[in-house]
Amino acid sequence: MVGAASARPLSPNPLAIWVVSDGRAGIENQALGLAEAVQRLTPAEITIKHIRWRPIFDRLPSALKSPAMLASAPLTAPWPDLWIATGRATLPLSARVKAWSGDKTFVVQTQDPRWANDRYDLIVAPAHDGLSGDNVFEITGSPHRITPQRIAEAAPAFADRIAPLPHPRIAVLIGGKSKAFDLTEAHAADLADQIADAVRASGGALMLTFSRRTPHAAKAAMTARLSDLPGWIWDGTGDNPLFGFLHFADHILVTEDSANMAAEAASTGKPVHVLPMIPLKSGDKFARLHDDLQSRGATRPFDGALDGWTYDPLAETDRAAHAVLEAMRTR
Image (tube, rainbow, N blue to C red; front, side, top):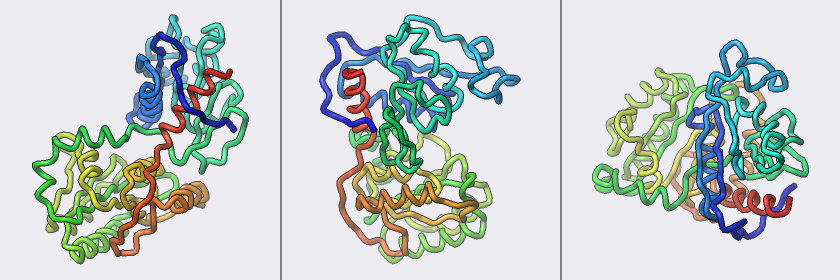
């Protein structure tokens, strides 16, 4: 496993970093968050690249794909100093870019690639995936773009709406259906009733946002049961108030289906209460993640009470950025 050390500039010139993904926000933000963390440590210029394969070739195994099959513009020299990629779509290119660049480009892949793992200089992988190897650097959760500074900078835009709300302010981040979990209308209604009871008992206010994966019926059930509480249920119109919610919250409630939401919430240092979902299959990976977060004092299962506690905010993306720069220096 790769270790981390303190960062120092690699050269007097800014690093050229390419952030490579299929363009989906949740995927791109992992690579971009890591690139921005590197940029906070050393001068760097970040360029975003999107990879799309022609539909007829999209489902081919990575080993069979070639640049001629791309629907997006081909990537060409000059190659970057640092290539940070996330997602299946990037693998055929991530595995080849070192050769194309004459071994100049340092290649980082986030998540578990599950293919050609020895062809990347560094894999920044969620610890709950259980991946091992000399080029693997494990972190709790996945890289992300949430930092205390970004939250603080975004908060004033939402202050007029949130600042008058009574304390405690409870931010609620609802996920949705996935391969591992479901959120039925009935379960959503039950969660909403528990949340409503907790908010009313505390005398505080609700700040709720849904994800793109939240089923319509679940969203409607929760909105109907929670809309009479003081607060804000974001309906998806206007600017996303997530950072405002995180900044002004006294407590954060997140559904257990999203590793990213839980780890991002834990970067705030605020109590994170985990809401149960309906499991669809064995949840060993998610159980490992939530055990890790609990062992670090960041999260607890939601039991209806809004108890407070403190812990050191997670800074896993920054830790990974240190590891990237150290690995670049010592390769």
